[in-house]
Amino acid sequence: QVQLVESGGGLVQAGGSLRLSCATSGRTLSFYRMGWFRQAPGKEREFVGATVWSGSSTYYVDSVKGRVTITRDNVKNTVYLEINSLEPEDTAVYYCAAADRVAPIQTESSYAFWGQGTQITVSS
Image (cartoon, rainbow, N blue to C red; front, top):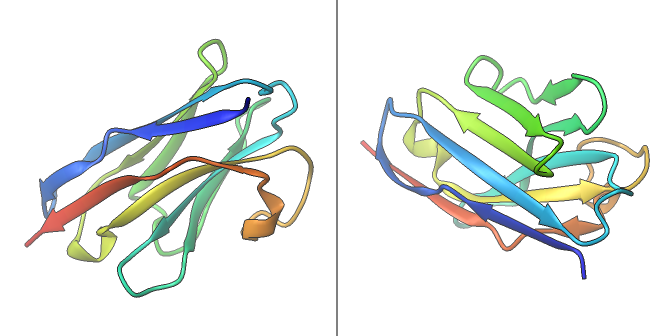
């Protein structure tokens, strides 16, 4: 069974930082790209960034560039999302997702497997 489990969310004041983890298990060798999405209350799910397991390529949406870093531990099959300078608008449930083939990077349907999400709440 493929599982993606996010952790590391919590309550933080504006300006702080958090690092989220996404631990993968099961049929992970087929994963090509790991993406991060978030969904704020009352809003649509939003793409944040992504990385590939091989190499060092990363991609971030313009709205988070400079504040977000995605890294990987290929041995542990874990991907991380670090968010700096958190703002209240970053409050959302954050999801990691896995794509098993090349597909549009920001499209939800490109990712076949999803975690349960972890909550980040940013206070003013």
